[in-house]
Image (tube, rainbow, N blue to C red; front, side, top):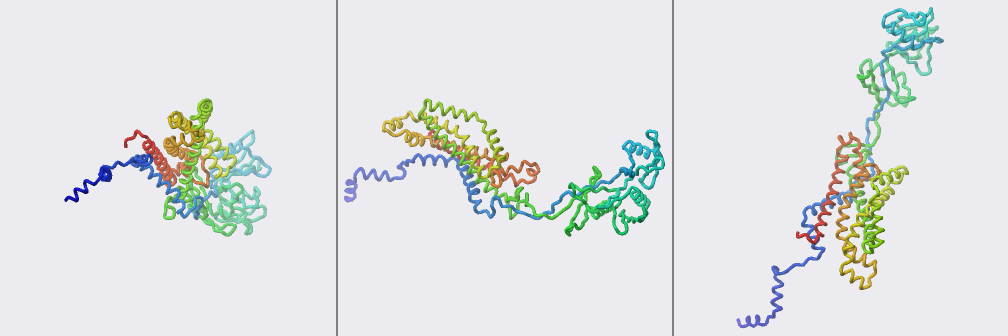
Length: 517
């Protein structure tokens, strides 16, 4: 007991203070300014959410592109039944005129003739001349005057084979035989045969065929063989919508026939299996978000597009901050005529209509066919060069208030150079506000790039950005039917811009010394 009392007496006040200072409940933890800012930032839930969103988008854009099995400009192909217009078919329901050799039959005579036929008259008169009408068969009429045949009118048409010709008399005899149901006829000493389908032949040589269907090729200068014309006519008469034939190269082709009741015509289309871009393929195991109009994987394009959009945003903000810090720092420190000159330059830049200027420059680069990579560099330089005035004004305002404080007077008294006073003592004190401004500017810069790319004035193919991905929705059909083309890019853009705004708000609150949180 006595020993314990002596030990207590031998203890110094310093020992007692050490015991107290080691008590966790009595210690006071002092945080550095940086740690205090971080603590305030991470207490802000929206700021943490924004930081999480940005981390996710950075991983998606920069890491996702590395692990993707595809490249951003890799195109995929597929076989498809590509259809094109082959021919148009109309049924002749009007009388067509064939004028005899050396005769004339004007449009006035045609009108007079039609009026007489409708009235079932056997003749008509015009300009003191009487014209006789004789019926030679069903919808087949012969017009003559004074015993001389002038023309014939018929709804049936004789389609001659290539290289064949037919006189007026033979033309008339062929139609008379066809409308009369005959299988042969003789004209000018030559005997012809007519099949049930209307094919006219001369000793085994096909001269042409008779039909009321007019088959016209869609392409200028193209020809349709007799075989195909006959098959089309037979298919229409038998109400068949598909025919097949063998072309000159020995390949079997398929034609589809569609009737248009509105104008009473038939459209003939040709289907052919073709190796084409796998455009607008639906999401699948191979392509999780489908493919775009160029047959490229949409998920891979989104990853690379995020990389391009983020890199452009950071470089533009860096250029703007670099120019703004230099111009604003010099203006705020020196004042006087230097400040007045720089501020007038800032006013000039504020008066420049940036959006029309960028549109004009984009159109000029389109006309000059600037390489897409060089175009992207020009885009970053232009956006950065037009964005520095706001940062310059911020830095100038902060330095105007800081240069009058005691630490700057002491720095000047110590003989520190002007360069070091500005960039070693003044600018570091502006960094917190500068970080907040740049963070908030990143979102608007990415929106600007996306807008220009959407208008076709920004990033060009084959490079991807979220803006030129959304450019596909300028087609209303794509917008309403292929949601996987534009909605994911819009979501990525929304998440990134919101993330930068949340982080900017959080940094602004964290750097504010009046914040109590």
